[in-house]
Length: 125
Length: 107
Picture (cartoon, helix red, strand yellow):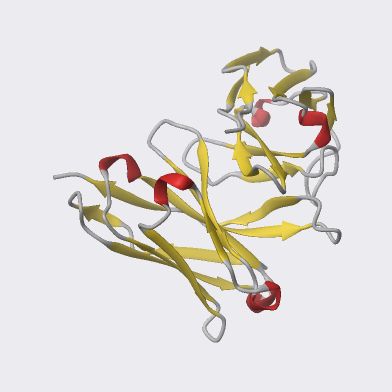
């Protein structure tokens, strides 16, 4: 059974930092592309970024609003995904979900097929 | 930037067919996925690559995508289908984009 368990959420002041973790089990983490998706209170889903498998270069991609402030990393030996968030802003307040991103064999499409329970980040003074 | 537009809310009677649309420029040229999210829960993938159902998703969920519009159709809608539904598109140019979501009410 695929499981993704996020941790590290909480209340942080604007300008502060927080590190989220996502512990996974039930699949070969090292081969997986992993993403973070967030959802502000009462709002829709927003993709934050992904990290590719090391076999695909291990590169991380981000949306513009978080580029330079957020860093996604992975520890394949511990089957754990991380999201380091610096210079946090009130608009980063959201539930952050860890997800698996599955690619079609021809790399022509991708989708998010397993989700964690989410962890809430509140950025407020 | 690329945008996906969804009708904020759709209502359907139990047993009827619900259609939830998602529009975007030349959306038919991209692959679309759909997610169901019930209150207080994480999203669940219900359709990927326009029309494919993951294992465990009931056959009453189907999808299509052509022109500028993708559609999620729920046949014989049940009370348990009441949820928010999000479309998501991907291609090598736009990467990942979500629609704003549609609240499906079964009354």
